Length: 407
Image (cartoon, rainbow, N blue to C red):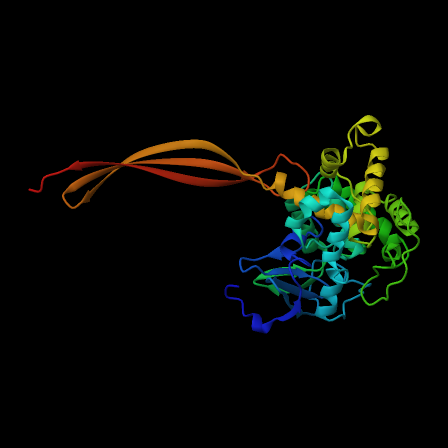
């Protein structure tokens, strides 16, 4: 574990089959986590900077609990702060949704679906997070026609420009997520456009205005009672049906009234921000999975219409039940690597040099061929034309020897 002194950390006994933070925090659920070279993940969360590290048997954690420091002029300290006084262990167990036995869930989903049984074993430990509903809403508005890296950049810009500053870790500032009131002022849309948010700037600003105008705690009132905010006792989520429970359907419909929220964004928020496990977000990638593995794409479901969208959700709920969205996210993550972390090598330039060396009384000529390659690599939730480029240089050495007499 490198130079980390884990004796200074607290720990929870969690196996990688129950939680893998390297997968869970990278698969497009949350967009503020940062990972350093020592393998430490960190984020400003509930009035602290929370740091995490994991090995085969334990999840290590520590936090810096701070008073909020002077922040950007438009930032507003959170007025609703459930969980802000929770200890680190309580916060981690709630945030990572550690109560369900994931091994048993994987077994149930595998028994119901041969495709899941085939693909999921290589991607164990994927858990659906219990995030702040407002943060999930804004993050997924940013996700429209976007990739994970760019969503993270946008969310970071929101935090540093409008979120309360909690403190610094490893020389970097950490801001909490801005409240709706901070993003509802005049001028926010124009500034977000200047920061590169494009058409999403209008959606974020108008949705912030709408949420700020609603009764206090409105978003959390849409939560699944089985997955309440931290510190609240769970209760029944209602009677199950093929279309999902009534509370889920009601939350989904109310979210659709907000700006920039279509069916997919609404389902992302229901699943990852409000705890409705039956919500199945269907984007173009999930549509491809449905076509390839579940025989969609023909007849009345030949294109991704609202009818097809609903049919895919119903199909997955019939297979996997109340946690259909969780099982779907495991398959999404398993497939993400297959098409997103791709390397495409392209020869750009060749150079050849002759190097002459003496080895004893033998003159050695080396023909050194340098080949520069551009490798295009990306990690994304949706396909995108933008690629990050990495330069690699290969050297091929051809040795030729000539004997030279000593004088």
